[in-house]
Length: 187
Image 1 (spheres, rainbow, N blue to C red):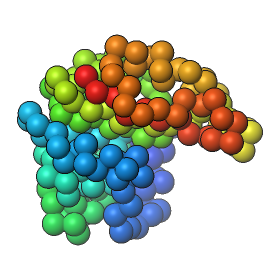
Image 2 (tube, rainbow, N blue to C red):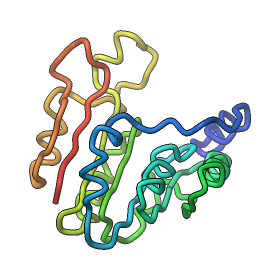
Image 3 (cartoon, rainbow, N blue to C red):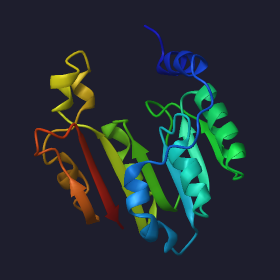
Image 4 (cartoon, rainbow, N blue to C red):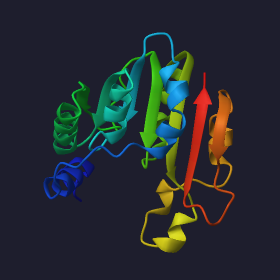
């Protein structure tokens, strides 16, 4: 079986450097992000080509982008240079490696689900820190039945999982027309 890192490296090798595409959930909460105090550090988990991390760097945060694909992270470094910001990149396999130690002012993770790291994400936030998390829910399986059902959220799963945090905004998979569930939460 091909490793995740090898599979993602191959995918990213076929791509090219793109313009910055900010994650809509981050842009919708731009003022919350700008008003963060504390360390003003951000961790972009499963960063891929680092669009979220680069966007956060443009908002003045010190960003660490974490992914299993060195090729994706290299594209992220090129994107950061294109946007005249700096990000730190870390190659790590979240199936075996822990998250980098915090505390972090902001942690984000988009379109990646590893239930084994969700608790670490919550614990990694500093007091007042924000968590942005969003990925596919079970309604995605209607459009993409070949998608692995182990990597989709059930309705209500985010609210339950992140109940120890203050939920700022939530779309938790109850609407069958929405294929993504997401949460913004504060510690």
